[in-house]
Picture 1 (spheres, rainbow, N blue to C red):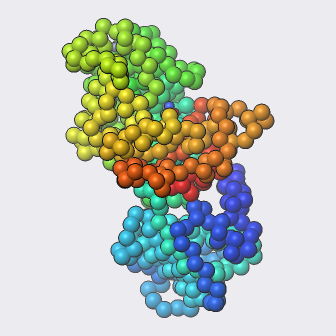
Picture 2 (picture 1 turned 180 degrees about the horizontal axis):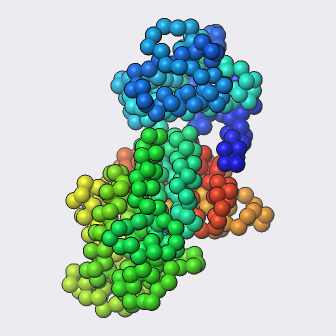
Picture 3 (picture 1 turned 180 degrees about the vertical axis):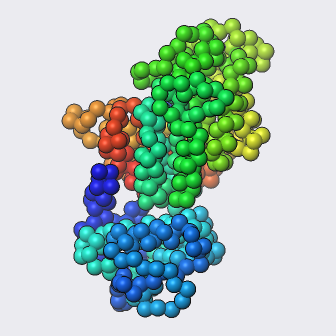
Length: 480
Ligand code: ACM
Ligand code: ZN
């Protein structure tokens, strides 16, 4: 079902066109595509062989065989000979510098893909796959017109975010997304693992967190990390703190300001019940859960959330107010003392994670109350947070609403299936440029990428989720 759907999307974009159109519909469009008119086509036949300097068990070799079998029915094998009348070469070449940079050239006798890493070669393969997919639709010929492609991503961070906290995604669905992401040359998957409606990661020290509801075991997550890494995708986990934590409070009510009782939330929105920032037990709890998290996820970045944390409980809580007093936090015209208290929590976790060799990312609210010293900001409430962070010398990832909010309507809201709201067409998503040409130098340097958010509140089924995510996720891939 899913495969069928995605092929339909692909054909919509890439298929059933002339050879030339078929190249111009590559997604994302490579930086340079040169068609060589005078030469003959490469023909994939029973005589085609694969030649490579990659290790024999490299994922790229298996992937190439898979592509050829699927798109042409042919099953070429590895050959150690450099010669041959029909050879596909996958070559690790350190001179093709740059993350994700690959060269793909097709001549009568040779298809060659070169890159400095297996991830870069994989991108060349994904382009080859799109060319062949167009070809299958046209003629079933297995012919590739001579071309030279030189391609490299614009940004180092090209991400989608999935939200298993709101509606759980089984691991096979996450793998399905990883497969689509590599197809469109995304290299980061953010997993929003916790929210008011559920805590989805097994924590051995605090088993009540997953006492109710579906969750990923640590072994399942390690398997996902491996699966993604093979496909040049890094998984960045998010534990959203100190707000969006009703599921934590339901399991451990002593970690809230009022002591509860609390229930796992059955509604969407922003809860006033959040972790108590004045309670040392909360800091210890956070250190425990992040300790188990970083043992599963090797990513340099760890996302700590930080969004939508109302301060009404903290304003009334004796422990929170005592902490504010002890730290000497004061309100001024920029920030309230409770906002500064949130910065205290985020700074505490940043220091803990920095001490363990990791860096933090937070939603743009982490700017309020003072930014943690080494944090990367994820700009979601528009672009200002990202621009402010970049101008202050912090890295920023742009995922601004509405452009990158793939949960919003993409067609006429009157007739579309219910979503969270908004109205964000494919064209509008395509129109987003995170770094305009006239941006200042700090902004150019520190905006490191883009992310599309697939918030899952109104996506009860995988069909709904895929429908919302595509094709706009392809538009953001183009931006990346
Ligand atoms: C967010 O959409 N609350 C980051
Ligand atoms: Zn409190």
